[in-house]
Image: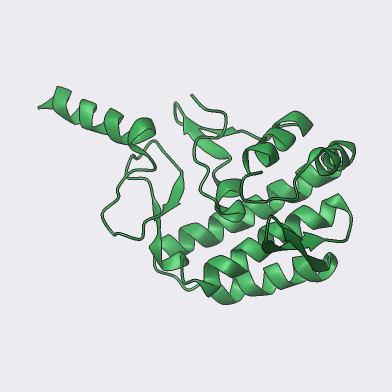
Length: 186
């Protein structure tokens, strides 16, 4: 199974999905500096300034970054699950995200002909600020109303379903398993 089972293109959602369920227990996929840099590397396709220099800075500050990141992940999971259950979490998310961004101002950089936010503070604050920008973008684009939990009761992954038809985090991970289990029980 992949180390990071669901990379969506949304840093905030991907952070939340670094926890999975395995045999009824929560499995954390970011336990140390290597896991953290591996996750960031997996996210590199949509966070273009993540390069060897940034990853090295993260490695040096990883213990401080890990604690903050895990606390933020817990907060985001609670908010996203509340959103899935129909609660309005926008105000809570905006307030927290703005505080994180205030702690690490961002500038803009042109990378590959696109404008991207670029943190100007330390790694500890910069990663939280980037995730917070993604949270605000999810709210701005009204994506929270399309967020769902996987229909597999043994899975805790969240995803965005713009079609309204998707049930599984992915067919490969859960859909095929659930369909096979249903077939065996018939």
